[in-house]
Length: 218
Image 1 (cartoon, helix red, strand yellow):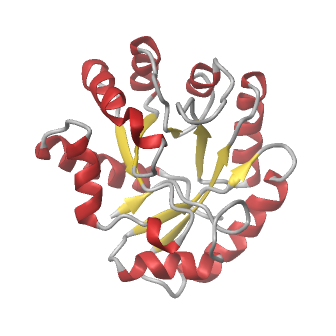
Image 2 (image 1 turned 90 degrees about the vertical axis):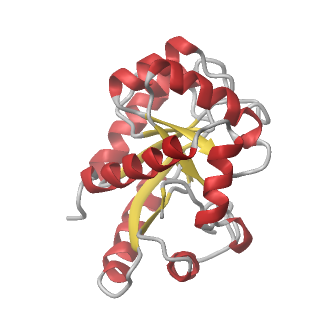
Image 3 (image 1 turned 30 degrees about the vertical axis):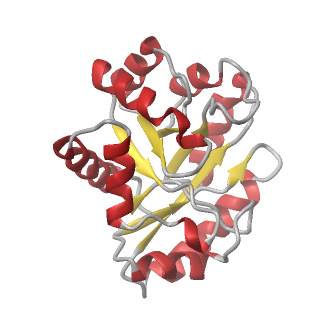
């Protein structure tokens, strides 16, 4: 198991990174990304701090910690510059908080994110086919979410991704211990979105390949 979207108490989660990683290590995870909510007020704090933690934990843990960030409710015009700044600070994984149907995300956020240098568009809501095609073209993953509310449009996202060839990722968007997905629940998220088991297994393989491509910690 790999998960590219989760939060600690450095944004709105409940756990310190060490316990966060330990919780999924017990579940047999290969890797997990901590992607705390960020904008220009805190990326310069979050990313270097998480790099220090990842260097410590990855030397001794089985589950590898991926240094990520989730640009959240950032005005569309600022997404690309902040994504570039996050990369320059050393983030391995750039996530953008997409146009979920349960939050007042600025319209145009999905498009601006897909035009930026990012890896994953989280809970993209009623993403258009044109936007999904752009995700496929730019090799940006679209998320099927295990989190309540955000998961309401999983079926729509899955259908649009199937039509356009966009890559999918299944993530917990975990904020607390009970949020982490077991392998069985992750499969239910995929099948519940209308995917075949074969397609679900391809998602798991694609997520593993993305993990292998991520910039190593320096």
